Image 1: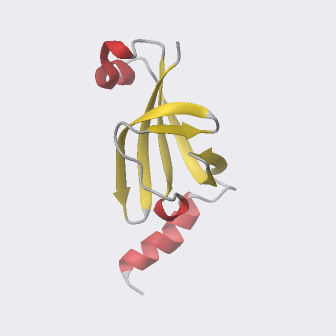
Image 2: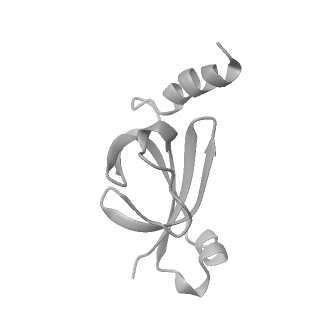
Length: 107
């Protein structure tokens, strides 16, 4: 077994274990194990979102396995997590794991 196969198998299972870090979420229509990280809007959202988001927004990072979603999200796509609508501002795929950066205007 290669290092890449080992990391995408064992290590992702540990990070996405529902007893430790992950929870079951509805990620754009797919129920999967994911870790959600809500970012403080004090400085992060105004840096990246500009005046369009102001202080009334949400910034969330979603971490999940690539194979748990039917397609990899793209920048500008609307995306839902647990029924809340967001806009994809960035999506990175690395060794079987997606890091999806989402922003929403909460006004």
